[in-house]
Length: 71
Image 1 (cartoon, rainbow, N blue to C red):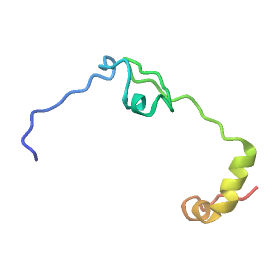
Image 2: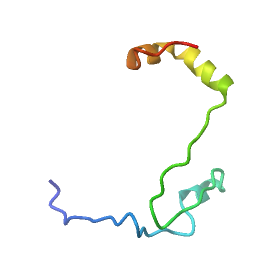
Image 3: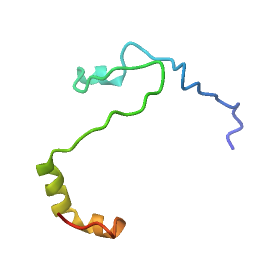
Image 4: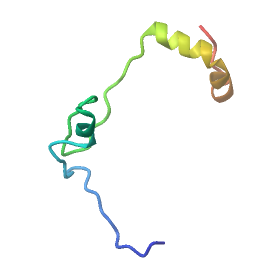
């Protein structure tokens, strides 16, 4: 709708730079860049924090996961 040429992204050959915007924040959240898209690594949430989230936001689980049963 903008009348621009098509823009193709090659997920196996990404153009990366040595640093990204995190450098403006003194690498508060450093991360690595890769020339290819990679699947995310699993991120586990400690049981204590998961229980706190479920307790404080039980309305969310009940609304969007009706079969959810509080442990």
